[in-house]
Amino acid sequence: MKITFVVPKDDDRSSPLSQFVQCRILPPVGLRRMAGLAGKRGAVALVDERIGSARHNYQADIALFFINSYNRARCLVLAKLYRDAGCHVVFSGSMLANDALEPAQYADSLLVGYGEDCIAEFLFDYQRGKAKAFYHSANKAKVNSEVGGKRGYPTMQLAC
Image (cartoon, rainbow, N blue to C red; front, side, top):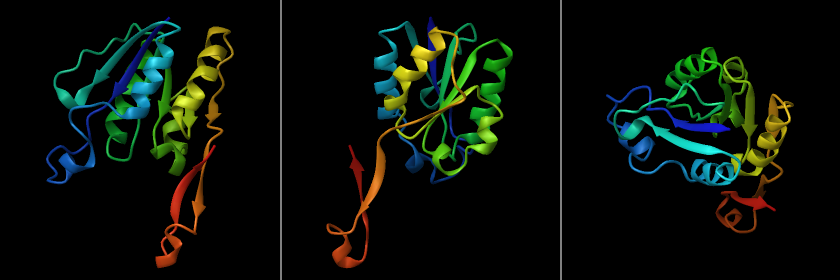
């Protein structure tokens, strides 16, 4: 099984804030963790358009995209190309927690929440030919008002 992890470039590189919106050197930590977990089940490639010219592997079995609000348009264009080539397209990223309706039209599966929590279940289902359209992380963020609440700002903690 060949899996390509894709980090699309941001939609508007001309924006003076674009360099602060995303890092330019390292892939997102969650994506690296997912690639490490997936590497136990197949050949893994990482395509990061933010750090130069990227070679896309449209021959992969699975193309997993890291989607955010700043790279949404580029991500949807690439997802269509991969899907047209016969890849099973998967989206993961923080944008899905806010708006999964439009991306769902371009993907075969969505990993909502912490993708590294869902990737093993998705790959197991995919290998059996029973990949679902929606996977949700068991870990959820909860508000802890004791720590930051003294100033009126809730803080986020993971409920594990």
